[in-house]
Image (cartoon, rainbow, N blue to C red; front, side, top):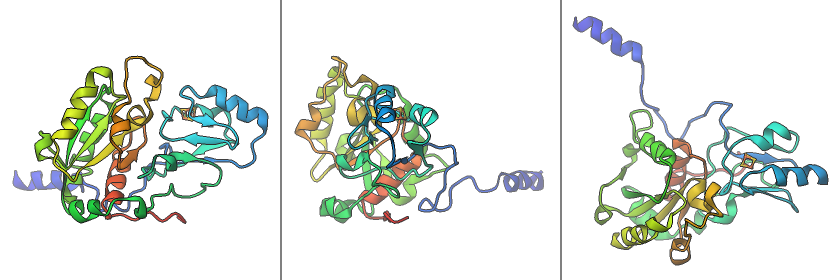
Length: 258
Ligand code: SF4
């Protein structure tokens, strides 16, 4: 009996990812886009019209990862202009770094000089996060859950979600921030003791996503409070979240020449 159970355990192999700093996702995963420098005006115009969330701009042709819902339509129709790679390391500490032009051929920049020094000093070894779903559709929330499951096991780095803002060092925001969630989100953030951080996850939270023009959302929270980390995706992949947080607290380095 015992031998047969041991055989079953052996056949399962390793359930967890041994090294979260060295992960390659499947080729078909849509991560960092590459924008071609040689796209004619007509194609640029059609790309701008095609995108359902106004993520594509012209002069120069650029793709805003903070708006993109990764539907893939631009790549399907104009593969000569935009191609998505499987590079999941697309989180940044500055909103403007989410805008991809043809100049960005390798990694999305994440410059530690734009990260407040208190973050690495206080949270480099332990970071407790309170998650607030501000009108989200539960997709980013599910991926955040997945980052703590047996496969990713992100808590091995001392990073965990907690049930109360009083126990947290920062807030993780998902969803476009509906008007009804505006005040609870602000109250939650104020209940966290200083110093604290803000992590914004998913296209809905970063830009409003498909709800950007809705009268039912309010983006005033970001006028009062400045985020420390922007994590694109719709929803984001757990590895994008993991890489972004580790980069923020100084435990992962992004090489822009990779
Ligand atoms: S993949 Fe992103 S940029 Fe391309 S059409 Fe879809 S939303 Fe727009």
